[in-house]
Image (cartoon, rainbow, N blue to C red; front, side, top):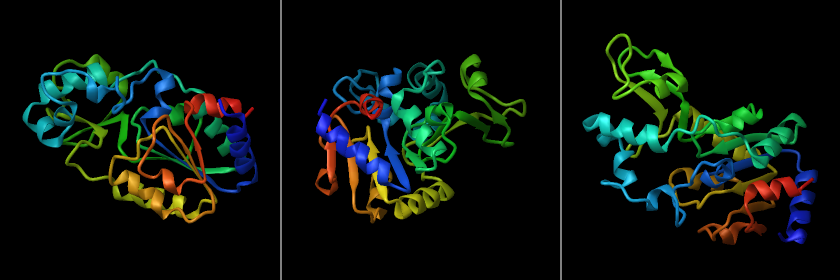
Length: 240
């Protein structure tokens, strides 16, 4: 690990008054949740149909049984625990230095670590609602269910997860954009910055320093004042 870069990140974080963290799947890999786009990630595993197809709105509507079989098998990790990255961000929020987490993840680990202000761009597996009557169901209910989960009213219970072909929640977008635009330090971690429109939100940042912590290069590297290629959990733990 590059100690000089860690020291630079530490100094930036210590002087910042309003940190915003923008994260992706790489934040949760150290908690045992596989990412999507790495060489051994979910999108490179072999299935009868590509994950992008299975996780689309039209597939959910047309083949709900197949959707839920894949969903329970590959998208739910109820025993996963927050790692050092989640815990550090929650600590910064308690100290009044971090104003928001903007995440593309759907696992709820930021909240599990204690973060309060979390904008979940792609929703959460912890929330599920009946498509007919709107009744709420938790993750445990979805784990216990089989086949297509149905409400007492007969409606299909849909996870509060943004599928391909679905739009992001407008209130979440507004909150995320406002937080990023008012930050004086933006830290981006564990994301390829390849998923739009989420990746475009970082362009609302107008501060002096942007830190990018990711194993591989991203299309936005040229905008970063500091780039760290180590796993984000290890980086956050090294801050001391």
